[in-house]
Figure (cartoon, rainbow, N blue to C red):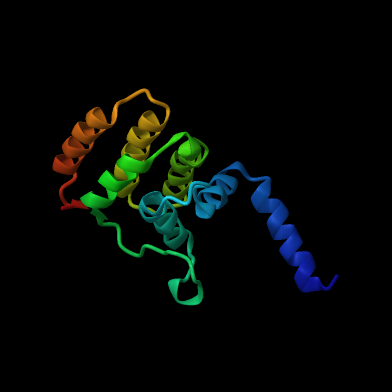
Amino acid sequence: MGLRDKVKVLILKKVLNDSTLYDVVTAIRGCDSGSRALKYLFTARIRYLAGLDPVNVEVDVREYGRINLLMIYEALGKVSRTDIHCLDHIVPALDALEKLELIDSKEAEVLREIASILNSVARQFMTRDEAVKAVNKLAEKYSDIIKP
């Protein structure tokens, strides 16, 4: 194993054993369900904030903090128990990005609230109709980030 590979192994071990970085790496992977809406809302944005260059990859990378309200509705319509594991990693990943000053606090707050609503629907703690009402309130509160 060459020096370059040894450095990669060292970096990999550091990332996997650092809880802050592990949450970010897990969120970068995305949901097992392959939900396009969830990947757009969270995974694609976290990838960008963590430093993934959209020019060099063939995965979704969301460069802008604005969120399309229709995409949130799409996520609400499709979120399921399969997505719980992914959603459980989103909030700690956002917390880590905020701690590392890679995301604006307001954007992190909005994404955490959306993740919480989606997680509640996936766990059947909240109906989809209740979730739509909660998202509509969120859209009013954060009209500068959530756009129709």
